Image (cartoon, rainbow, N blue to C red; front, side, top):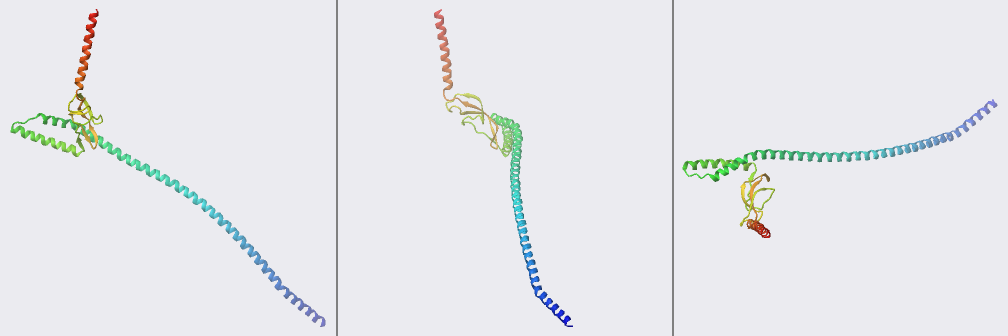
Length: 239
């Protein structure tokens, strides 16, 4: 009995000692777990930070690439837009030129009719009442024709007294004139016309050579003939 009791006491003491040591083991385990958790959290934060840096770097590179592509597309758009605008202007200009060419060709074929009307108007001198009525009818047709040409942008040149311009005029004759200086137009032989500021037909004109040039030329020819005559006389005397 006494031995049993001593055994029980020893067991109780052991239990008590074990209970005293248990909190220490639990505390150390908790500390280890906390340290592991802290290390894990720190490692996770480092991994997340690295991934974030890589993501930002990739995004920056992608953004730079997209900006370059945007700039390239923008330049292509500007060039295409400019090319299309030039093409549209060129097409419009070509159409206008073609229209002017067609109109010019048609009107040029009509101008000889206008010339004939003007010649007839200058030559006809109606005396009888019937001739005057015919003349008025003719004048009405001529005015209608001139009005149609005017509506199409045709305007006649006024050349008499103007200085000769090869871009507008075609010189058919040249003669001396006391009234006009050299290279000024004396007479209009065939009327010229403009079409919307451009030459539809050049005017045929007579141009002044200036005062006294014809006489001086005749005097030069006369002096040359007299010299030839004198030389012939001298030659006969020498023989």
